[in-house]
View 1 (spheres, rainbow, N blue to C red):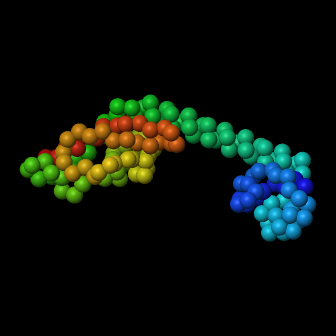
View 2: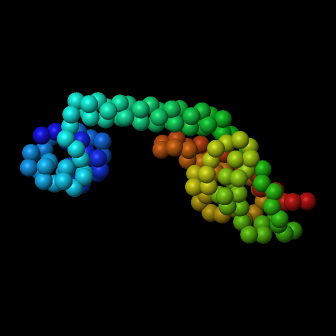
Length: 148
């Protein structure tokens, strides 16, 4: 019997997949526990349409992130902070500060996308990596300067 999985089943597959299983396993476990339903032509068609729509949405998202990568390449974010006479920052510049600077410049990023090996504690220019999407990263410059 063919079943459409409604939820992930550890030994069988992920939600949305169509699987061939024994009749007893389908009736007594999969369908009874609400993990799946019997596959009909209409159900299989709706699963295929949903999968195609999800693939299109992901490709559009990836295309948008690639465009953002091109726009951000070599971009410089200026951050002004309070600091002492030696150029040492009071506190540190975090990925949230950098993300706020990028959002103010018109980029749609979150703080978890900014990769800082160490917090920035001195004024100067730094190169920071931004992970936009799985496999899509770019480097930006962060110019930290003192508030006058």
